[in-house]
Length: 69
Image (tube, rainbow, N blue to C red; front, side, top):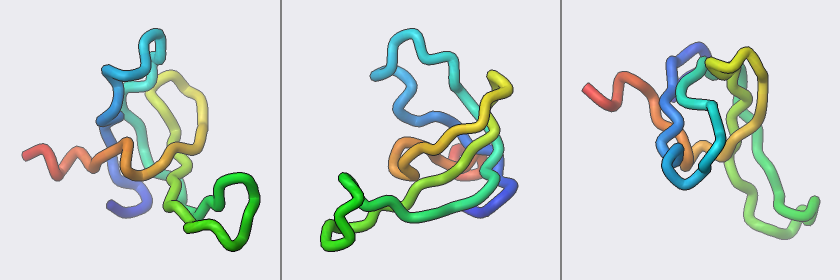
């Protein structure tokens, strides 16, 4: 998965009422739960969603559209 990739919200079924289904990756970063630098960092992506909103999501909840073919 790279910046500018079209992605699919892979975990969509477990989020009732969530209208995010696909989007474009804007950038990547790492996240440490609770701000604890000693905790394992997790990779997150900033995504421009089909709803027009920009938001962060763990990369294990999304997949690149190309991976579906």
